[in-house]
Image (cartoon, rainbow, N blue to C red; front, side, top):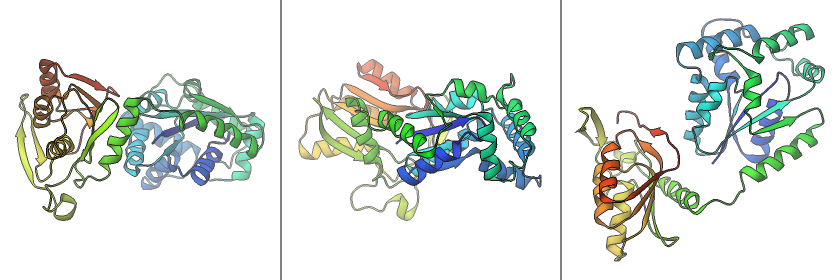
Length: 342
Protein backbone atom coordinates (compact mmCIF):
# COMPACT_ATOMS: atom_id res chain seq x y z
CA UNK A 1 0.00 0.00 0.00
CA UNK A 2 1.48 3.36 -1.02
CA UNK A 3 0.48 6.99 -0.59
CA UNK A 4 1.34 9.56 -3.25
CA UNK A 5 1.32 13.28 -2.55
CA UNK A 6 0.85 15.72 -5.43
CA UNK A 7 2.33 19.22 -5.58
CA UNK A 8 2.93 21.58 -8.46
CA UNK A 9 2.19 24.90 -10.08
CA UNK A 10 -1.34 26.20 -10.71
CA UNK A 11 -3.08 24.45 -13.60
CA UNK A 12 -0.10 22.18 -14.29
CA UNK A 13 -2.21 19.01 -14.22
CA UNK A 14 -2.39 17.72 -10.66
CA UNK A 15 -5.99 16.71 -11.33
CA UNK A 16 -4.95 14.89 -14.51
CA UNK A 17 -2.55 12.70 -12.53
CA UNK A 18 -5.26 12.11 -9.93
CA UNK A 19 -7.82 11.10 -12.55
CA UNK A 20 -5.42 8.63 -14.11
CA UNK A 21 -4.43 7.03 -10.80
CA UNK A 22 -8.04 6.79 -9.64
CA UNK A 23 -9.61 5.52 -12.87
CA UNK A 24 -6.79 3.34 -14.18
CA UNK A 25 -4.99 2.22 -11.02
CA UNK A 26 -7.71 2.15 -8.37
CA UNK A 27 -6.22 4.79 -6.07
CA UNK A 28 -8.45 6.55 -3.53
CA UNK A 29 -8.37 10.35 -3.82
CA UNK A 30 -8.06 12.83 -0.95
CA UNK A 31 -8.00 16.54 -1.77
CA UNK A 32 -6.57 19.44 0.24
CA UNK A 33 -8.71 21.70 -1.93
CA UNK A 34 -11.92 19.83 -0.97
CA UNK A 35 -10.91 19.79 2.71
CA UNK A 36 -10.41 23.57 2.73
CA UNK A 37 -13.53 24.21 0.63
CA UNK A 38 -15.69 22.50 3.25
CA UNK A 39 -14.22 24.78 5.91
CA UNK A 40 -14.75 27.85 3.71
CA UNK A 41 -18.42 26.94 3.29
CA UNK A 42 -18.74 26.28 7.01
CA UNK A 43 -17.44 29.80 7.70
CA UNK A 44 -19.84 31.32 5.17
CA UNK A 45 -17.08 32.73 2.98
CA UNK A 46 -17.02 32.91 -0.84
CA UNK A 47 -15.27 29.99 -2.49
CA UNK A 48 -12.38 31.59 -4.40
CA UNK A 49 -8.57 31.57 -4.48
CA UNK A 50 -8.27 34.24 -1.76
CA UNK A 51 -10.52 32.26 0.60
CA UNK A 52 -8.58 29.07 -0.13
CA UNK A 53 -5.34 30.78 0.84
CA UNK A 54 -6.73 32.54 3.92
CA UNK A 55 -8.55 29.53 5.35
CA UNK A 56 -5.75 27.07 4.53
CA UNK A 57 -3.18 29.28 6.25
CA UNK A 58 -5.51 29.83 9.20
CA UNK A 59 -6.08 26.08 9.72
CA UNK A 60 -2.34 25.48 9.68
CA UNK A 61 -1.77 28.33 12.14
CA UNK A 62 -4.51 27.10 14.52
CA UNK A 63 -3.37 23.47 14.57
CA UNK A 64 0.01 22.79 12.91
CA UNK A 65 1.67 23.52 9.57
CA UNK A 66 0.92 19.96 8.46
CA UNK A 67 -2.59 19.73 9.96
CA UNK A 68 -4.55 19.36 6.70
CA UNK A 69 -2.39 16.67 5.13
CA UNK A 70 -2.09 14.90 8.51
CA UNK A 71 -5.89 14.63 8.65
CA UNK A 72 -6.08 13.42 5.05
CA UNK A 73 -3.35 10.85 5.66
CA UNK A 74 -5.33 9.42 8.60
CA UNK A 75 -8.38 9.09 6.35
CA UNK A 76 -6.23 7.49 3.64
CA UNK A 77 -4.86 4.85 6.03
CA UNK A 78 -8.35 3.84 7.07
CA UNK A 79 -9.11 2.74 3.50
CA UNK A 80 -6.36 0.11 3.42
CA UNK A 81 -5.80 0.99 -0.25
CA UNK A 82 -3.32 2.92 -2.39
CA UNK A 83 -4.16 6.60 -1.96
CA UNK A 84 -3.30 9.97 -3.38
CA UNK A 85 -3.28 13.29 -1.49
CA UNK A 86 -3.69 16.18 -3.89
CA UNK A 87 -2.19 19.67 -3.36
CA UNK A 88 0.66 19.35 -0.89
CA UNK A 89 1.72 22.97 -0.45
CA UNK A 90 4.12 23.45 2.48
CA UNK A 91 7.57 21.97 3.22
CA UNK A 92 6.43 20.81 6.67
CA UNK A 93 3.56 18.90 5.07
CA UNK A 94 6.17 17.11 2.99
CA UNK A 95 8.45 16.35 5.95
CA UNK A 96 5.56 14.98 8.06
CA UNK A 97 4.25 12.82 5.22
CA UNK A 98 7.74 11.42 4.68
CA UNK A 99 7.68 9.97 8.19
CA UNK A 100 5.11 7.46 6.98
CA UNK A 101 5.85 4.27 5.13
CA UNK A 102 5.74 4.09 1.34
CA UNK A 103 5.09 7.80 0.74
CA UNK A 104 6.18 9.42 -2.53
CA UNK A 105 5.86 13.03 -3.65
CA UNK A 106 5.01 13.82 -7.27
CA UNK A 107 5.45 17.34 -8.64
CA UNK A 108 4.10 18.64 -11.94
CA UNK A 109 4.81 21.78 -13.93
CA UNK A 110 4.16 23.27 -17.38
CA UNK A 111 4.52 26.52 -19.30
CA UNK A 112 2.56 29.36 -17.62
CA UNK A 113 0.47 30.21 -20.70
CA UNK A 114 -0.43 26.56 -21.23
CA UNK A 115 -1.45 26.28 -17.59
CA UNK A 116 -3.60 29.40 -17.75
CA UNK A 117 -5.42 28.10 -20.82
CA UNK A 118 -6.15 24.91 -18.91
CA UNK A 119 -7.71 26.66 -15.92
CA UNK A 120 -9.87 28.79 -18.21
CA UNK A 121 -11.24 25.59 -19.74
CA UNK A 122 -11.61 24.02 -16.29
CA UNK A 123 -13.68 27.02 -15.16
CA UNK A 124 -13.96 26.24 -11.44
CA UNK A 125 -15.04 28.88 -8.93
CA UNK A 126 -11.41 29.68 -8.09
CA UNK A 127 -10.22 29.83 -11.71
CA UNK A 128 -12.29 32.73 -13.11
CA UNK A 129 -9.39 35.22 -13.17
CA UNK A 130 -7.29 37.14 -15.69
CA UNK A 131 -3.83 35.94 -16.75
CA UNK A 132 -2.25 38.72 -14.68
CA UNK A 133 -4.17 37.64 -11.58
CA UNK A 134 -3.30 34.02 -12.28
CA UNK A 135 0.42 34.85 -12.29
CA UNK A 136 0.07 37.04 -9.18
CA UNK A 137 -1.77 34.26 -7.29
CA UNK A 138 0.93 31.79 -8.19
CA UNK A 139 3.77 34.08 -7.13
CA UNK A 140 2.06 34.63 -3.78
CA UNK A 141 2.04 30.87 -3.19
CA UNK A 142 5.46 30.02 -4.61
CA UNK A 143 7.65 31.08 -1.67
CA UNK A 144 7.24 32.01 1.99
CA UNK A 145 9.31 32.07 5.17
CA UNK A 146 6.17 31.39 7.21
CA UNK A 147 5.84 27.59 7.82
CA UNK A 148 2.04 27.96 7.85
CA UNK A 149 1.90 29.43 4.34
CA UNK A 150 2.25 27.89 0.90
CA UNK A 151 5.72 27.39 -0.52
CA UNK A 152 5.23 25.53 -3.79
CA UNK A 153 8.80 26.12 -4.92
CA UNK A 154 10.23 24.32 -1.88
CA UNK A 155 7.73 21.46 -2.21
CA UNK A 156 8.55 20.96 -5.88
CA UNK A 157 12.25 20.88 -5.07
CA UNK A 158 11.63 18.08 -2.54
CA UNK A 159 9.63 15.91 -4.93
CA UNK A 160 10.72 12.36 -5.64
CA UNK A 161 9.52 12.68 -9.23
CA UNK A 162 8.94 15.82 -11.34
CA UNK A 163 6.66 15.63 -14.38
CA UNK A 164 6.72 18.15 -17.22
CA UNK A 165 3.20 18.43 -18.63
CA UNK A 166 3.62 20.49 -21.77
CA UNK A 167 2.51 17.59 -23.98
CA UNK A 168 -0.68 15.58 -24.30
CA UNK A 169 -2.40 13.13 -21.94
CA UNK A 170 -0.77 10.11 -23.55
CA UNK A 171 2.71 11.52 -22.92
CA UNK A 172 1.92 12.26 -19.25
CA UNK A 173 0.33 8.84 -18.70
CA UNK A 174 3.43 7.16 -20.10
CA UNK A 175 5.64 9.08 -17.65
CA UNK A 176 3.36 8.10 -14.74
CA UNK A 177 3.49 4.42 -15.75
CA UNK A 178 7.29 4.48 -15.80
CA UNK A 179 7.38 5.83 -12.25
CA UNK A 180 4.73 3.42 -10.96
CA UNK A 181 6.79 0.52 -12.29
CA UNK A 182 9.64 1.68 -10.06
CA UNK A 183 7.73 2.32 -6.82
CA UNK A 184 4.87 -0.20 -6.90
CA UNK A 185 6.43 -3.26 -8.39
CA UNK A 186 9.89 -3.30 -6.83
CA UNK A 187 10.99 -6.56 -5.22
CA UNK A 188 10.62 -6.31 -1.42
CA UNK A 189 13.35 -7.26 1.05
CA UNK A 190 12.69 -10.31 3.26
CA UNK A 191 11.74 -8.06 6.19
CA UNK A 192 9.36 -6.08 3.96
CA UNK A 193 7.88 -9.31 2.63
CA UNK A 194 7.17 -10.79 6.06
CA UNK A 195 5.88 -7.48 7.43
CA UNK A 196 3.41 -7.34 4.57
CA UNK A 197 2.25 -10.83 5.53
CA UNK A 198 1.75 -9.62 9.11
CA UNK A 199 -0.30 -6.68 7.83
CA UNK A 200 -2.36 -9.05 5.72
CA UNK A 201 -3.01 -11.22 8.80
CA UNK A 202 -4.21 -8.09 10.64
CA UNK A 203 -7.16 -7.85 8.26
CA UNK A 204 -8.61 -10.91 10.04
CA UNK A 205 -8.57 -9.06 13.40
CA UNK A 206 -11.92 -8.63 15.18
CA UNK A 207 -11.28 -5.69 17.56
CA UNK A 208 -11.41 -2.21 16.05
CA UNK A 209 -9.29 -0.72 18.85
CA UNK A 210 -6.19 -2.33 17.44
CA UNK A 211 -6.34 -4.49 14.35
CA UNK A 212 -2.90 -6.05 14.30
CA UNK A 213 -1.33 -9.19 12.90
CA UNK A 214 1.80 -11.22 13.53
CA UNK A 215 4.04 -13.61 11.61
CA UNK A 216 6.78 -15.77 13.15
CA UNK A 217 9.53 -16.87 10.79
CA UNK A 218 12.68 -18.99 10.94
CA UNK A 219 15.22 -19.40 8.15
CA UNK A 220 12.89 -17.40 5.86
CA UNK A 221 10.14 -19.95 6.42
CA UNK A 222 6.78 -18.94 7.93
CA UNK A 223 6.09 -20.98 11.05
CA UNK A 224 2.81 -19.51 12.30
CA UNK A 225 0.63 -16.40 12.00
CA UNK A 226 -1.76 -14.68 14.39
CA UNK A 227 -4.14 -11.77 14.67
CA UNK A 228 -6.14 -9.98 17.35
CA UNK A 229 -9.32 -11.89 18.23
CA UNK A 230 -11.27 -13.48 21.06
CA UNK A 231 -10.48 -17.02 22.27
CA UNK A 232 -11.93 -19.72 20.02
CA UNK A 233 -15.71 -19.99 20.32
CA UNK A 234 -16.14 -16.75 22.31
CA UNK A 235 -17.87 -13.62 20.93
CA UNK A 236 -15.75 -10.97 19.22
CA UNK A 237 -15.57 -7.24 19.95
CA UNK A 238 -16.89 -6.50 16.48
CA UNK A 239 -20.00 -8.49 17.43
CA UNK A 240 -20.70 -7.54 21.08
CA UNK A 241 -18.46 -4.58 21.90
CA UNK A 242 -15.37 -4.08 24.02
CA UNK A 243 -14.52 -5.25 27.54
CA UNK A 244 -12.29 -2.66 29.22
CA UNK A 245 -9.71 -2.77 31.98
CA UNK A 246 -7.56 0.07 33.35
CA UNK A 247 -3.78 -0.25 33.32
CA UNK A 248 -1.46 1.89 35.47
CA UNK A 249 1.89 2.27 33.72
CA UNK A 250 5.33 2.73 35.28
CA UNK A 251 5.24 6.44 34.42
CA UNK A 252 2.02 6.86 36.40
CA UNK A 253 -0.23 7.26 33.37
CA UNK A 254 -3.48 5.31 33.08
CA UNK A 255 -4.92 3.77 29.92
CA UNK A 256 -8.00 1.74 29.09
CA UNK A 257 -7.40 -1.52 27.26
CA UNK A 258 -9.81 -3.97 25.71
CA UNK A 259 -9.27 -7.36 27.37
CA UNK A 260 -11.85 -9.37 25.43
CA UNK A 261 -9.33 -10.29 22.74
CA UNK A 262 -6.04 -12.16 22.59
CA UNK A 263 -3.17 -10.18 21.05
CA UNK A 264 -1.76 -11.22 17.68
CA UNK A 265 1.61 -12.24 19.17
CA UNK A 266 -0.09 -14.35 21.85
CA UNK A 267 -2.30 -16.08 19.28
CA UNK A 268 0.69 -16.89 17.08
CA UNK A 269 2.67 -18.33 20.00
CA UNK A 270 -0.39 -20.38 21.07
CA UNK A 271 -0.71 -21.77 17.56
CA UNK A 272 2.92 -22.84 17.64
CA UNK A 273 2.45 -24.56 21.01
CA UNK A 274 -0.63 -26.46 19.82
CA UNK A 275 1.20 -27.67 16.74
CA UNK A 276 4.44 -28.54 18.52
CA UNK A 277 6.44 -25.94 16.58
CA UNK A 278 9.63 -24.80 18.34
CA UNK A 279 10.23 -21.03 18.15
CA UNK A 280 13.81 -21.04 19.41
CA UNK A 281 15.87 -18.56 17.37
CA UNK A 282 12.88 -17.35 15.31
CA UNK A 283 11.98 -13.81 14.20
CA UNK A 284 8.60 -12.24 15.00
CA UNK A 285 7.05 -9.56 12.78
CA UNK A 286 4.29 -7.29 14.13
CA UNK A 287 2.76 -3.86 13.60
CA UNK A 288 4.11 -2.15 16.74
CA UNK A 289 6.09 -2.79 19.94
CA UNK A 290 4.53 -5.77 21.74
CA UNK A 291 2.88 -5.11 25.12
CA UNK A 292 4.51 -6.27 28.36
CA UNK A 293 2.62 -9.59 28.46
CA UNK A 294 3.44 -10.38 24.84
CA UNK A 295 7.08 -9.42 25.47
CA UNK A 296 7.32 -11.91 28.35
CA UNK A 297 5.92 -14.70 26.15
CA UNK A 298 8.27 -13.79 23.31
CA UNK A 299 11.26 -13.95 25.65
CA UNK A 300 10.24 -17.27 27.21
CA UNK A 301 9.54 -19.08 23.93
CA UNK A 302 13.04 -18.40 22.61
CA UNK A 303 12.36 -15.86 19.85
CA UNK A 304 15.58 -13.91 19.25
CA UNK A 305 14.52 -11.08 16.95
CA UNK A 306 11.45 -8.84 16.87
CA UNK A 307 10.72 -6.56 13.90
CA UNK A 308 8.01 -3.89 14.32
CA UNK A 309 6.61 -1.51 11.77
CA UNK A 310 6.29 1.30 14.34
CA UNK A 311 6.76 2.03 18.03
CA UNK A 312 3.95 1.72 20.58
CA UNK A 313 3.58 4.85 22.75
CA UNK A 314 3.57 2.69 25.90
CA UNK A 315 6.28 0.31 24.68
CA UNK A 316 9.32 1.54 26.65
CA UNK A 317 9.00 -1.22 29.26
CA UNK A 318 8.90 -3.95 26.61
CA UNK A 319 11.88 -2.40 24.83
CA UNK A 320 13.89 -2.53 28.05
CA UNK A 321 12.84 -6.15 28.69
CA UNK A 322 13.98 -7.15 25.21
CA UNK A 323 17.31 -5.36 25.77
CA UNK A 324 17.91 -7.21 29.04
CA UNK A 325 16.95 -10.54 27.45
CA UNK A 326 19.31 -10.01 24.53
CA UNK A 327 16.54 -9.94 21.94
CA UNK A 328 17.22 -7.87 18.83
CA UNK A 329 14.48 -5.26 18.35
CA UNK A 330 14.11 -3.33 15.10
CA UNK A 331 11.63 -0.77 13.76
CA UNK A 332 10.83 -0.02 10.14
CA UNK A 333 9.93 3.59 10.97
CA UNK A 334 10.93 5.78 13.88
CA UNK A 335 7.39 6.93 14.59
CA UNK A 336 4.91 6.23 17.34
CA UNK A 337 1.60 4.40 16.85
CA UNK A 338 -1.10 5.52 19.28
CA UNK A 339 -4.67 4.27 19.45
CA UNK A 340 -7.50 6.30 20.89
CA UNK A 341 -7.96 5.98 24.69
CA UNK A 342 -4.92 3.73 25.04
